[in-house]
Amino acid sequence: MFFRTGKKTAQDVSINEPIDSDKDGNALTLMDTMAVDDTVIDDIDVRMKSEKLYDYLPTLEPRERSVICMRYGLGGRRPLPQREVAARLGISRSYVSRIEKRALSKLRACFEAGEGGK
Image 1 (cartoon, one colour):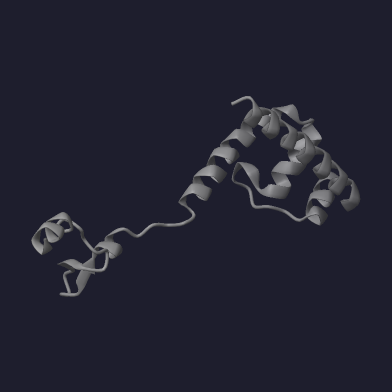
Image 2 (cartoon, one colour):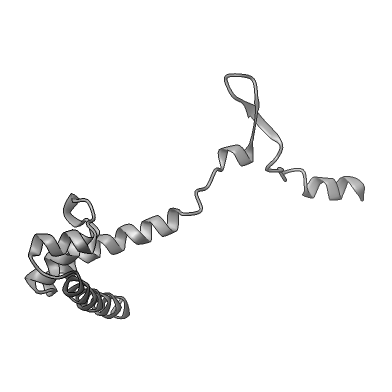
């Protein structure tokens, strides 16, 4: 009975068992070789949504598009605070805020419509 039970688990491997050694002679375990970045899925999702964002930018008015691009650093630019965006466009910071809010609402609607259609 003992040998029959042992035969079933003979192929089992612990993730903490040494399976090899590195060039310095330190033991490498299966866990060491299976390093997983917990944010991989999130990073892929953000990248996909970022690419989709560029498809939706043409739905914005030119001023909305320029505010969003400046505020969030799209197109390889660095993100700017509302104060700097306002100075560049010659408008008030509160108007930049309203434009940004309206543009984000439009983009959100595009994303929701796009995700629902899949």
